[in-house]
Length: 446
Image 1 (cartoon, rainbow, N blue to C red):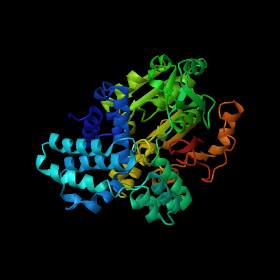
Image 2 (image 1 turned 45 degrees about the vertical axis):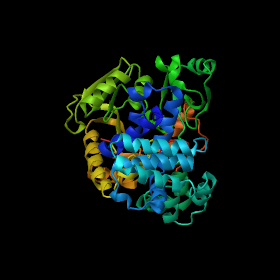
Image 3 (image 1 turned 180 degrees about the vertical axis):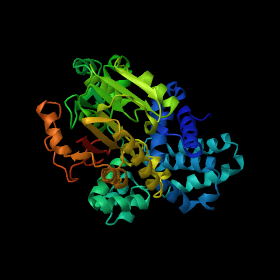
């Protein structure tokens, strides 16, 4: 019996994530996956994201019944075991026989035939040791310390310790629980008529949390609709939409780290008469940006913002800095297995250099918005506060107060804009139904 296309695709994607530091979300949208039948696409996504979300718990489960340390296993063998263990322990609708047989066949397909009996023995033992999803949820909900929370939610201990210290244990629990769930798909309506068009196409939607033009997909595949393919709606997390809204309006707007372009496009829509300069360091990402942002008023520049010679200054500047991405783990679970605590210092230095360079591009009385999709203080407050110490020509504006202006315009619809983060704004996964973002607004005062 041949291996199913879904399991084969999932196996290959997981190996590339391990071996090449690829991102699963990108591979799941590759040409190969697009050619799969719809049910196979769904199962491939479930297997890939499930294994990545629960990797440490899967490994602990496998290690209990394996006759040799996991560190000694070839990557191909361990990947097949993880796939089998996930199906046995998490997917009730998959027959155990199919999960075991096809996982063993994947080992053989990877030319590790000598390990096939070992894989078969391990997976057969797992059929008697798996726990229910309800039991896993209870363990996560009842964890009384960061270590127990990290173990039950399949997160690195050092990361959960940081969140518990910064936000408290209960908020850390919300973050972890959100990261282990399928995140909400949010869209931005570029045309008012698009909402009714989606409903006619059978897409069930609901209102967003923050913005008038944000919607959540409740049911249906929006990517198959004409409104999506023709660009009248755009898939974009609502926190990302909010950042673009905060940038506001200007005659000249600079987007410093623009790819993949979601915020750039939203900024262009808000400033149809303005000039938007989108800067991207990497050539291939700049090309993606050019193809994605369907706006006539954008000029894409392949350059390093730290060396940019833009001529006239800008009255609005966005620095959506490259970061750890810990606010997007629900969408990119491989981040939690790649990131190391020492990486945060390197990221801080890079972000500070980018912000300091961008500050030079701001016109008198102009505003700069600094954002990251990170939950870590080093990448948010720490960067802004150090930049302010080194440059006295800027002031930090109170962002919650600034949001009231968007509310007066009818664009910001959230009921409560109070912040426990001083003049900054943070969205927290699990507390808010979106990615985790940090946002600060600076204004040049001379």
